Length: 379
Image 1: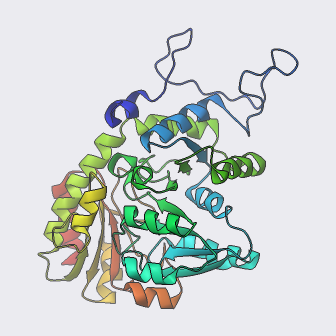
Image 2: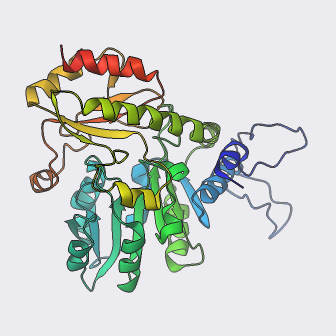
């Protein structure tokens, strides 16, 4: 089944009523037909019919064997990191979401998990950072917020040759544009709050895997069942509803982003534009070989820090807010918002500074978005 059809119809099985929309099952527990007999649903933390429908759809969209719908993107990343033991080493993209950096630096470090950051867009540098105890490589591609592109196929091969797993945060593109599991990755995570939801009204996360019979697959099932970070039935239903329009939304957003990135390049107050859809982007060709779209995330730098903060207060249509991926356009100041806890060393290495803005392009009329940017930049 192709993505557009799968997004609309999912794995929905009609019940006796013929309801088109998946029912919301709000039961915490389920009746057993008899001793040692089960319908497949025993207790809501372990399985819920509405959530299972969502998880089945997500697994199919990612071309994976299993997926879990969780309470947030950070819950999904946390479950992936649960696969590491004291003494293990994880190698991470040096340019990635600040919440992931905080989780590794402030929490897993005290559990004895070692880590290093590297530019995973550079395969030689990544290989040089591998240790005998490296058990996972964790990447974002495109990265947040500098839009670096890492080679998923090559990194999967590198990880597997060294007995490690490759985990990919696929939030920026969604499975509509990129399917890391088909390129060799073992684990995919999402902040489903973003493009999968697309309406800025729920917090949710996803973790999907390539092999549910693997040790890591069985361990994830145990951790999630035991710790209970599952998504609620109502939020599961809202996410199912949102996925029906995923393809339409992200393709309209991408269309707008391409026009805006091209316009930003012409602006005298803009010094740098980072968008993988631009032919001059250093990762453009690699990205085309592993994704079917460029997405709608743009980062750009303006001439001065003063202009960066001033224009945020001049916006009229675009919202100055955290998050991304919704139908509403959002402009973010990463240094003070999403990456406020990024170590200074990583800020310097990646070029994330006080002139950088990150733009999540929505589905509004592109001319209205450009007009708002124009007046804010050039007031």
